Image (cartoon, rainbow, N blue to C red; front, side):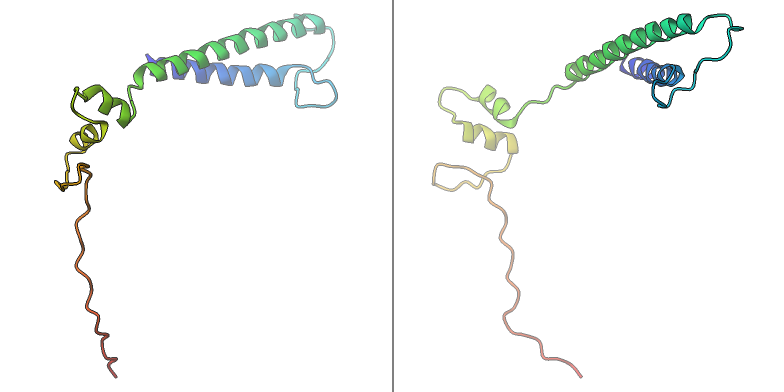
Amino acid sequence: METVLIVAHLFIVIALIAVILLQRSEGGALGIGGGGGGGGLMSARGSANLLTRTTAILAALFFATSIGLTVLGQLNNESSSILERATEQTDGDVTVLDALNDLSGETSGDASGLDLPVPAAETPASDTPEAPSQ
């Protein structure tokens, strides 16, 4: 569904760009569709009204597909913060820190009451400098 809406959105964008560029320019802008003779199917005023209505319809469709894509994106987004997940799992005696540790799966097991993950200690490098070789 989301892919169909994205494709429709892209077609609407391309059509909207084309219709805007076809409109008569006022002041030398990018408009291509200028005056011309009266030998066409529509008068200059009729084509201006048609292009204006088409632009308004395409703009409304553009906004509708943009809102639709936003709503679909929010429906598919089920992420929650780690604090929300931790508070959902807490019982009466369990603190949020304990629940966070249960979510991470690593505990240090120290007696301070806070079972926070502790990184492993690295072995220090030797303190004696190496002699330069020549």
